[in-house]
Image (tube, rainbow, N blue to C red; front, side, top):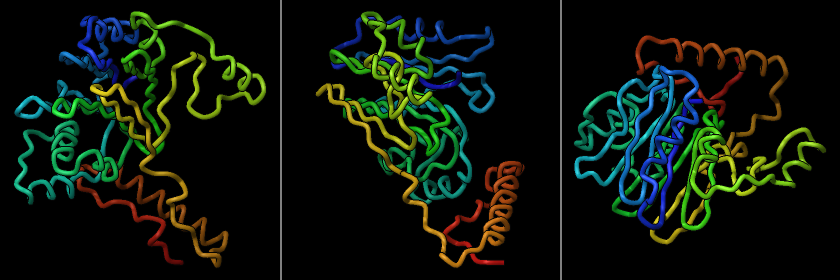
Length: 270
């Protein structure tokens, strides 16, 4: 599965070959694309089939303090590029990871509010000693993670985490009980004790210096505007069709500057 992976330590990393081992465990075809980056406290990588993000990664700032890995695609990026140009920011290329890098320099991690599309991104801020992981509003790219003994390990597949030295494979008994009772896992649990899955629309922040981990939501479904009580079923069907057509037109457009689909908040009866 395409995604990002890596390890971040509060102390200098002892196993510099861990990204390679993680990539090998998740490489299911010989043509999978893998890029890695290592520094004293962090080792990051991305794995994918090379369709949406074919260029080599990561994107690194000129001073080397910021590192960005990105998997996925973004829509309606032209306004963001124009905003950066108006601020005097020069984009070195048209890749999404370069765009995210420059947005982080101007907006900080709040940049996730401006991203539209399926994605997962890792940002290592070496100056602050902080690693950020963020995903889209539907979590269409999985991120599993475990934090223990001054180390954060994450990957798009559980087998990527399982190869980390010192990781103990233990069944989460609560998860087992949930799957037997509800036929699904609840919350952010996995079958491995100590391993969680990043919820949708979330930002994971790991402060390597303080060994402090926090996960926050930057969006939730209750932020979708309520529809008027006078909305009829027929009107809802018409509006749903209009939004679907607009979304398909946008996603099949030849240029990335295709008009965005109108939001539900701007709906008016036909």
